[in-house]
Image (cartoon, rainbow over all chains, first blue to last red; front, side, top):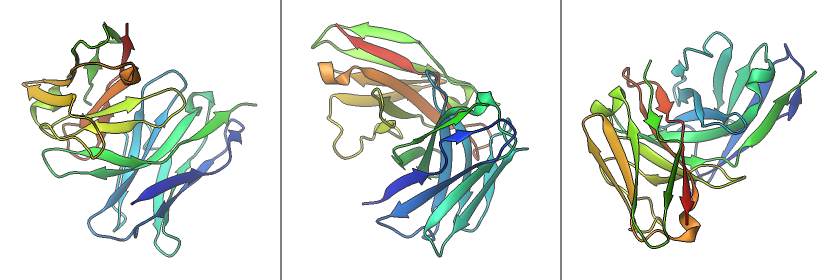
Length: 122
Length: 108
């Protein structure tokens, strides 16, 4: 059974770069045509899509975050990563990694990691 | 960009049925998926596609879609169903995703 686990610093200062990793277990990250995704959820709010990356490295980022986001895949370590530059307090959220599934007419995210809280504060 | 709109809160009596709705233009082209989230937990997929339940989700949960509205129906609601429910779909480009603001379900 595929499982995802996020890891990374929980506390950042404004203007720093958020770096998170999602380790994939129970399956290979380079299975075609899998993609991998990041979603965040600010405290008390709904989830917000950040982006996805395919096994081949094709990325799709939320327009609101596109200028600050980079995603990558490391097949040798069976994990994928998120970098978010120039963070502010507005980036404080629980960050989830998840696997998008489905095709052109439908889609869903499953499984999800347990999430990791990232707080941005001076 | 696309938006998905949900009622912020819905309440239902124990044992009754409840329908949670999600409205948005992207739903004319893409099926919604639905997630249940309890405090301190990650969202859990409860419905996807036309009316597909993941393994382990009881058949009290069902999904439907008409026009730009997707619905999640829970029959014979139990106390354990009290949670936040979020809808999600691809956006109009098909490459990005959008989530609804969530519906807090209270079981009376």
